[in-house]
Length: 453
Ligand code: XLS
Ligand code: NI
Ligand code: NI
Image 1 (spheres, protein in one colour):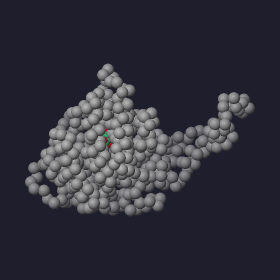
Image 2 (tube, rainbow, N blue to C red; image 1 turned 30 degrees about the vertical axis):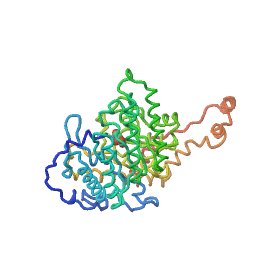
Image 3 (cartoon, helix red, strand yellow; image 1 turned 30 degrees about the horizontal axis):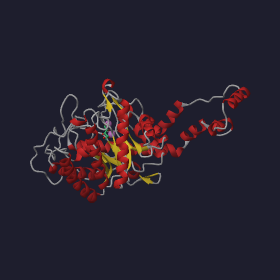
Image 4 (cartoon, rainbow, N blue to C red; image 1 turned 180 degrees about the vertical axis):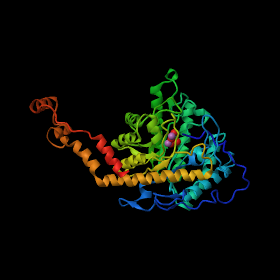
């Protein structure tokens, strides 16, 4: 989800800025599970090792600039409520630069080492591409300075190809070739600044790469155009020497009725069909998985099976509301599943856990940004410890391995190696009769998981 715009920030009449945006908040410390201090970590202890690796290395937590710094917390029934006293609500470059400094103060105090942005979250879109690029460069100067000062790194950058009027019928999949060109120019610049900032990745989320109705849509042509843009990006990546990982982020709908990148399986099929699978991995978001009618665990397993699990947009949806509510993850069962999948692929390489999440509209004070992220980080810390314990225990994986053991030898091994066909299998059945089945033991395994939670 993306903020409607940056213009409805409330509470900007606070007079001159103090040098700090969060003067009352010190660096958030780990105080352990018995602490009653809401501005402390109860479980996330950055340098504590789990399975021989520091928690911060496992998680690679990232703040989503668009939510933390730009989301006014509007909903379809009312404008923004967010109080951000440091923000004058203007489209000036100065305001954007100041906001960037506030973002780094926030991340430093929180103890998060990565962030992600869209070009248009960090800097204003002005009247021409040229002016917008100049503004972006001026803000990127500050981001570079702040990265240098704090050691905080860019997890990934991206271009916002969905908010501006010109993209109302798509960007790469717009029926208008000039819009395609504009999108390409914007991606070019966003890749270049991501490269300049040493980003470890670059994400493509096609907000409006889909359709509202097939009555006016040439689906095949639009999909081909989307692939063209991605191939151009691959070429440009080589040209400028950017070595970060490309990701594509699935989402089934919203804002469009149907999005071409609807889920992990659809993205993988699209990438394979268009010869892009070597160049992009998936950035998976929990709330998008649930909108697609899947669990996050499902999406992660599908991506991992194709060797394409890249990064995670860590959030959650509200089961009672039908849209992308982008809430902070607090469910230990969910974070356990996510960390199990991450550990199973050997951990993140370029990716991380990016909090693509916003405070509720009711939580409008700056300090709520801290509560929200602290909760998400603690929930993932518990998920990591639980997932690690489940793997150390080994009963779960032993069960799964054993469940497939009939393929380890005899006829099963011959099926897997392709040494038998229908004739041999028919002969096998004639000689052996009915298969001897074992229970799937779902309930037993659910109980096993709960032993650890
Ligand atoms: C929107 C998406 C978006 C991407 C980046 O729903 O999650 O925020 O992560 O464009
Ligand atoms: Ni989302
Ligand atoms: Ni996202």
